[in-house]
Amino acid sequence: MSDKHESISLDEHNNEEQTLDSSLTNEESSESNSKVDASFNLPTLDKAPDVRPYDLSVKHRFIPERLTALEIINERFARQFRIGLFNRLRRNTDVIASPIEPLTFKEFSEISPATYLNLVHLNPLRGASLFSFSPELVFIIVDSLFGGDGHTTEIETEGREFTHTEQQIIKKVLELALVIYQNSWTDVYSIETEYVRSEIQSKFTNITNSPDDIVLISNFKVEVGHSKATFCVCIPYSMVEPIKELLIKPPIEQQTYQDDNVWMSSLTSGIKQSAVELVANFATINTSVAKLLALKTDDVLMIEKPTSLDVTVGGVPILTGNYGKMNKQYAIQVEQVINPVLEQLNEGVFND
Image (cartoon, rainbow, N blue to C red; front, side, top):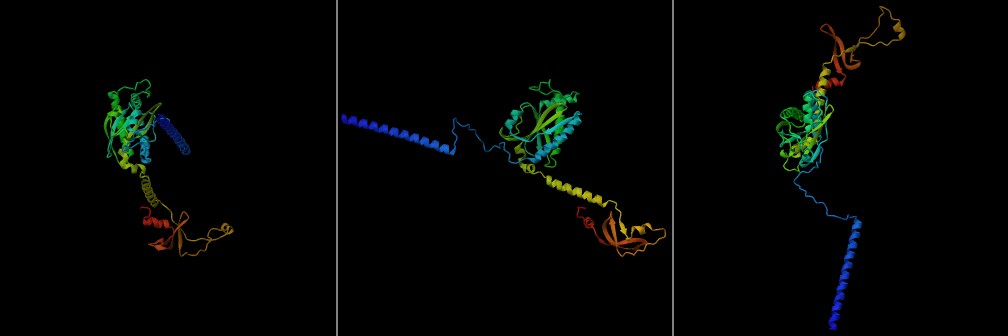
């Protein structure tokens, strides 16, 4: 029995030593790990990280290039639409284009829950775009057309449907906007706007395949007198992606070069039609002021007949020639053209 008791105690002692060694080993490993983390400045996580799913097949908000041509289109549209509203309302109006903002369609739906949405096709581009009018803009236009000052503070816009008269008036303004927007695209890409239908809520439009698809928001601030409102144009990025090269690098340089050629051709044609006076200097006499003051009537100045004459225009030598007679008239036979610009004009260098 004593031998068994001694063996059991030895086993317990060995187990305690192993447990102590393992605990020391764990503490040393934890201390070493903490030292490594401190040396690499690794952050300690107090709580579980917020992990979100990421779909690689969906185009997210990031757009690598700046769509310069689309910004030019918006600026051109804002200027022309301001003139169109002034002609309709006969009131001082101002339309200011804001920078293009890429959002997901879900985010766009959240920030514009109650607006007058119009689905518009931009043929031949695939898909549909949205022309979104805020209720304030609708009421400002209606009030101004019926002789009001455009104030809408007493009108409850939230949850209120538009009347038939208001819908007809805003359709006229939409038609004006679509014509101007189509013309604004002319120098970049030829499109044809086509009205499809109107909606009040964006969830019924379905202009994207997924709520996470990217859309390009072009916001415009409208001021009619002292009243302010907004409207925007929402275009799916997948709609303009086939022509993104034209939107990134618009053909401005080529257009400017063509304009320069037209201007140069018009200038050249105008120069050719200008009337000038040719002056042929037959002789030059060197004299003094005393002799010049002593000249009297019937005095004779001796000169030599020149063999070659210099012809000038405004004091600038143009050509040289021989003096003589032709068909009983004094004439000059051209020997040499001095100014090379005339030769270039005759050769049609400036796009005659």
